[in-house]
Length: 418
Image 1: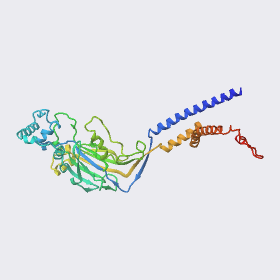
Image 2 (image 1 turned 90 degrees about the vertical axis):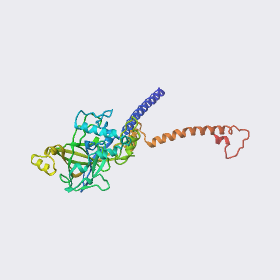
Image 3 (image 1 turned 45 degrees about the horizontal axis):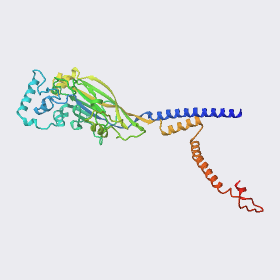
Image 4 (image 1 turned 180 degrees about the horizontal axis):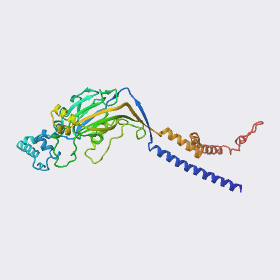
């Protein structure tokens, strides 16, 4: 009976141990799975500054090429891309002054086969035919001081030739006060009379008139097609900016951040290498990012009282002023910024702490206990093997009973062996 009760206790202990071990493994799996989800915590703080770097402002006219500047060579190479010619090289437009001009250009081209053999440079095409900042910029002021076309650097985007104000990161402009009048204020003429006629839709066809604007950091190239906003003629648009600095101390995975501090040139290597393939890829999230929240409002210009004045001042009629002029005012709301920091919420120390806690809860063990068990598992076979070798050695010596020597106060060898 005692033997049976002892066996039952062993069985119960075995079941308890196996159950605890199963729960421990389940808890381990949950901890490890949660760790590899890379959870993070976000900390938001509002900081103040005595002065702030004014952002770069990139603007593009929504019309990529001026119609009056087209040459026969340009039309031959880019006419179909611009939606002006069909696949056979003939004008798509019905009878109109534009068709007559296109036919005249094509006729000139037909007389000069040498022009057809010249290589076509797309950058040069947009450089020559794009709207020039000297023609578009009517007025420019930064913090009340005059600025001019020399402060706008050309940059080429999907919209053709665009211009960036304050894009030099080595010497950016600084503002020391928030509110209207303490940022960039420009008046532009979008030159709608130069817009290309639309006779067929293409991937780049735009039905809008105006400009597209992006406010970004000097370290970041313009992604104006994806991140820009539109500004219409006939309106004064106010853009109140709030700077946000995002820092990721623990980007995925495992806190490694092998990319540049901002999504600049390094992230373009892989997409360029895959340009001819069907595979799509994207730039990873940068470790440090400066972005600008915007609040946009607008009012109509000019009013009836100023229309005649502006028409006389710029030698235009009132209709032209309403259809082509716009004012853009960009400023900081205040000299503060939001610091957004993302940190790992569950690191390796937390994982090890949870593992140790679960191990102590379910099987009452610690690291030292596990080491003792491993040491016992290692030493036990060695000790058993050592006893076996010693027993074999003694078996070859102890059976010798032929020569016994008796000493008065000492035992025989066999006595010690026992």
